[in-house]
Length: 59
Image (tube, rainbow, N blue to C red; front, side):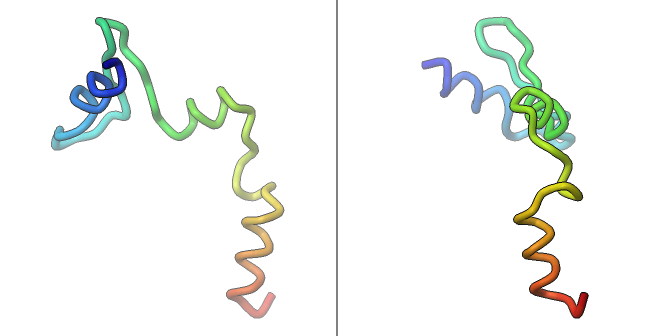
């Protein structure tokens, strides 16, 4: 399956550059690429991250 091919080509390298290939197509799964693809905001703007941070600090 394409999922097996993705993982087989993505894992096991000493230096992970967050890329894999499926059917000869190079796919990036770098965090910034995923964030841009789904329109995620940076953690600084994430309400849940801010709440988690405040819970574990005196701020």
